[in-house]
Amino acid sequence: MLQTLLFLSIKNRYPENGCKRCKEIADKSPDADTLYRRINMKDKEEILREFPSIQKEIITRLRKRRIKRIIVFIDEHEIPWYGKPNPYVIGTNSFNGTKLCFKYITINTVIDNCRICLFALPVTPFSRKDKLVDELLCVAKKWFRIGIVLFDRGFSKDSKVLGMIEKHGLKYLAPIEKKEKIKRITNSKDGVNEFYHTKYGFGKEKVITNLFFVPNGKHEKEKWKNYHVFCINIDVTKANLAFLADLYGKRWNIENFYRDAESNFMIKTKTTDFTVRYFFFLFMCIIYNLWYFIKTFHPIVAERWKDFIEDEMRKEGEIEKLLRDCLMYLKTMKFLINLSFSVTALSFVYYFTEKPEFL
Image 1 (cartoon, rainbow, N blue to C red):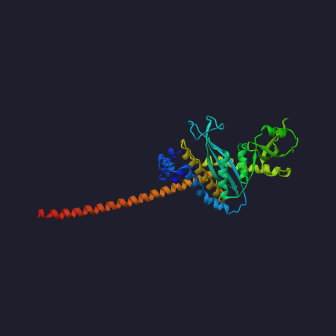
Image 2: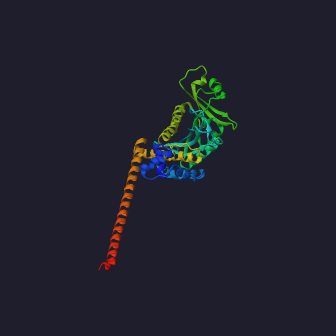
Image 3: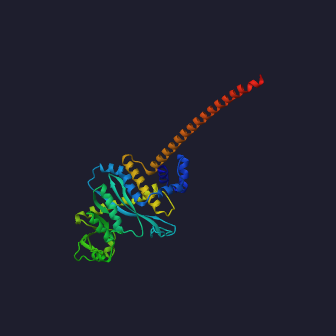
């Protein structure tokens, strides 16, 4: 089954036709129905337990590099759904032809140029972002010490998310939605530095954060349109503004992960089954992590690595077929030899039992 999953992943195939193709190449593969049935034997909790255990080998090796603190990125990824609504799909405006999607949230990092997805969770219509972020951080903290958390304005507009990160005792950096209060702060210099503003409170929880403003190159009459606005829970000075802006640029690593992982290693499916889809997403993450880990030792593009895997699968299938043919040949020869001896024996018996009648 693992070989079949690997083939479907590197070829971006649907199980319905990919399993047949895998059987032609590797000479063994379950059909699509069997594959789905075996995956469904696992529940969500079992899958959640297995993912970190599979990651352990790679993460253990990365931890040996003695990185004091890591930067983590949190973001959501949407996969369009063109079927009927079901309890696990979410509304979206990101795609043409549909307003529905399956959504996942991941926590990623980069260690010595090795991009890795540390954990991933499904997002449902009833999910709370702060609870999802809490679970992601709990897993990541088991492996590494976290220096700062980077995310986009989709998270920073929820004051509960900022509160949850602070509850973990961590620092964060993110752009923030330009609400009316922020627009007023930007437009008027009354009591606010031109580049940063401290102790900005918002949300029902009255979360306190610091704001800083980075010019975006525009020259509009309304000043708030001329700045990117970020929130952060560390001290901001004019001296470290450029550093903080550059630091946030690292968040694009997670966008690159979604692009590369889905285009190279995602098993396609039309099933509405929540467990199967989540399993396929996690499997994509594992294969991506393995590729990038190998890439740090031996630079190799994804397409070449996938070709190498397929070539090895073909060789293994040919060897197994050769061994099976040899075994069948030996069995056939053994049968023929036994048959030959049997026929000879019967001939002798017949000759000696029948001959007296001719004497």
